[in-house]
Amino acid sequence: MYYVPDGTERCGYYECRKCGTRFLDTRIEDLLECPECGEEADDMELGPDEVPAEHEKSAVLTKVIEGAEEVELYDGLLSLAITGGNYEWL
Ligand SMILES: [Zn+2]
Image (cartoon, rainbow, N blue to C red; front, side):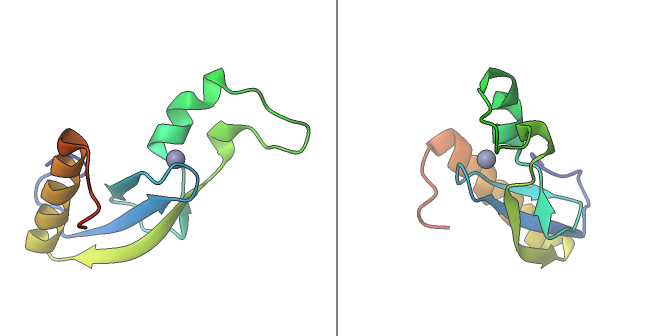
């Protein structure tokens, strides 16, 4: 498993509103920090109206995935999407 530990039976499927990154997380919340945007936080210039990127939760919960097999399926698909560079078919 790439995103969540083996045997995870419930996780959230998130999509970042800013960069479009999709990922899984064992936390189920309406909004979560995007791992991609978070990594770039140090390099970004912040305007007066912007909050620090590290505190910004830009990833939206799209779907709750339940069942170990479902979680494994999505984990595999998203992992492939990263290495293949194309996830339009998800
Ligand atoms: Zn992002």
